[in-house]
Image 1 (cartoon, rainbow, N blue to C red):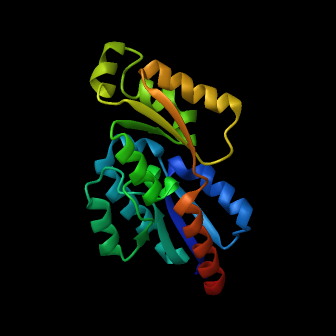
Image 2: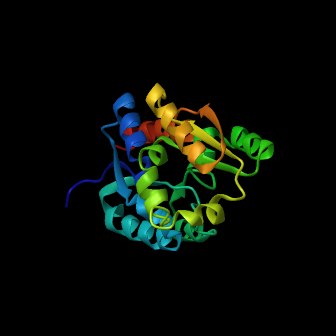
Length: 205
């Protein structure tokens, strides 16, 4: 049997690029990443058992496991699975909160509860996940039903946002009839947890 490696992060596919960047920045050869499909966000009831299956599939190969998911609409069911499996996850209801940090995100929510958030991932895949995923390409009249209670779009950027990215985010806000704001966040709590994992993995390796 192969000896266990350091650590594995079981992550939402929407975090794949950010985790790859953190891996490069920190030289984390002792930490591996296994991403589940980002499309699970459209079916959050499937996230808990998908994460459990990944834990069971990989647990024997690593000294430690960590889950990079927020609650992500599971209504606490993901946390129940993780308690049963003895695995921790990053704190927060969703990636918006752990990228921005709880304090900054709370302030954004207090300033305007009706806020639609974009991350770098959602900006890249907005048409596929939102426009097509919600059927707005076929039924644009549904836009008011989905977004009628929103007043603002905030782009939470993890990497340095280019002029083209900022323009695309502003264009999306305009299409949705929302005012636009940009909030650079970096990797937030994801980066902090990654550094902790690297240290723990090297100690266990």
